[in-house]
Length: 105
Image 1 (tube, rainbow, N blue to C red):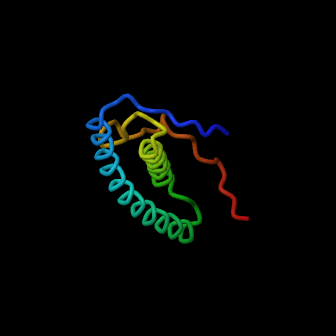
Image 2: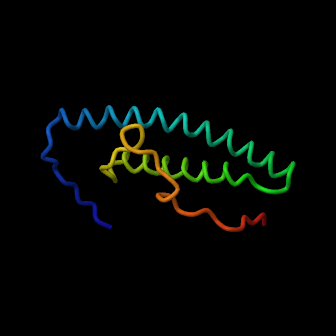
């Protein structure tokens, strides 16, 4: 594992701009966390009542998880592409497909 540190050639203004964008994205991440929590509770309630999962909610939450992943990569300086609201929200084609069968063991 490399512990190399690189000196950046960008100005402090650019660093501050990215920092402010990161703060906005982290606020969105906190809202996203609340939406995922509510969606999870609803999905399990639906699963208990109907004994099948809600596919539209499952696809929606899959997009949310991809969005959260993009925010974390941008915030931790591992990606340069800005996440939503500064870019497109991830669509179904951008997401890893969900598991075909969910197991409860």
